[in-house]
Length: 197
Image (cartoon, rainbow, N blue to C red; front, side, top):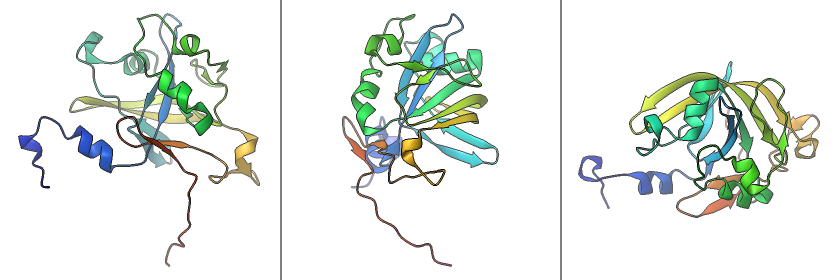
């Protein structure tokens, strides 16, 4: 099969199906009116270590105000957000927060997820998550029909249970990755390769 992007209406299924597994940013924000929002995004990654910057890229919504979903609108207004790492025990709750709720309703309340206070930003983190990054807005960039949001990490929460000798241990963090459609995966089957000199 050969694909010419100019001849297709969208490459979404091919891109989302081939670039796998993708980590999931479970992003909590707070509106200017104080309503907590929580939504998952699988276009997510680390961008820089110095300064520590992560990114996620919500696809725009033509039916939403200004074409932006709640999360990017909240980030633009408040310049703060929290990225919660999704682990297997939280997968169903994460999926539940992808539902479309009326404006002014919180996904935390709708799903019964507990909030935990953040140290440096207003939005709460998901209390049950093993890792959370408190972020301030670094930059927002329009990229085609998406908005890439870069956040500088201001504080990190890591549960002791997923550490070894004071460092995060990926063999203990049962992170969930997005595949395509309704398919997800865990990182249970890991293997090691030594980097050549």
